[in-house]
Figure 1: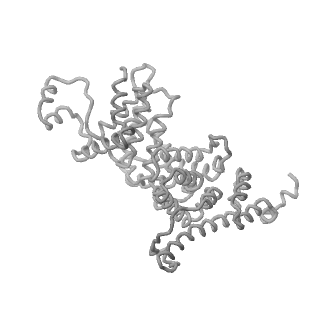
Figure 2 (figure 1 turned 45 degrees about the vertical axis):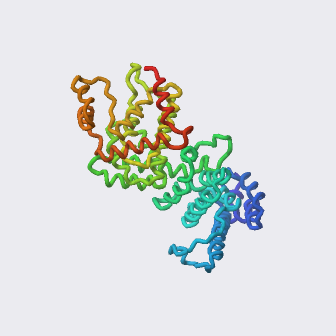
Figure 3 (figure 1 turned 180 degrees about the horizontal axis):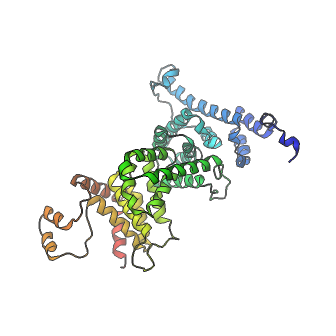
Length: 433
């Protein structure tokens, strides 16, 4: 390396870098297409890390979002309230909540650097939610998904424990179908692992040192908590797990599931410790369960004898049963759709998951061998049948009724073509034992 290069200071680099200055000039003049083209060309170098450009992009984004709020306030006949915004006293107007294309261009350019301004981060979540609710079109959904994928979800990883920020992101994600949400979680997971873009592009976050380092730190903290987790300290350790999962649920639950698949005695303590999570965390956990159940082609589902189920599948199925019974925010439709797809491919071993879900949520157990007394009890009333056929009480009668209702709603969700009950029954009947 030449000595003059080693002697170059950061100030010299900022003053002499004409490419970054050219991007700033394009942004100042409003030439968004030229600025985005040059920015994409320099994307592997992460131009948003340049402090001056980063500040300019965030100020432009804040002006765009504030401009819509000012327009809404003026249209309703009110003056701009200034500091009342922080106190929640800002009255909403009837201005068009749809965002201009420049907003999404700025978010693509800012990438995860938006985490540096939590106020702007929250405003962006509000604006995206209003944009999606107002437009309700495929184009608007694609724009919001791109903003979540490139900016908000990676930025959330770098925000310290902040459940309010997590709930704001979930306010946008909850408007999307579970298939779109799970795709976003998959991209988020790849970025945390430092994987390259599957489509062949050189994404800014494909090997972001900030994300990879954050994932390693979260993994180390989670391992420490899991080593200390027991029935005696569920409340304390559960809160610590919840704090970690607020910003990086992907790393936390990936580690938890990997340990549950090996140590089945941890299932009940872990499920009880997960009561401090946000709705988004439960959704990410459901996605990772689906990934582990559906993406384990390299792992045998049966032991070497060919008859007994492998430990990892048995433990994961038991965990699904306990989780779905205890927490109503778990996306049951996604799990049932996975089972339908597995049965369609004649993979009947996965029926173990359905058996655990039905048994834990409804209290209905599949009995293969019945005694003569049990057969006579089946002819009696509901109480006699319950006493004769139920060996272990999995929950109160009220909770079982609610669980059965949730399971029925998950199977009957959507139109007649999207209903999962009929395909599930047909595929089960077609399986060969």
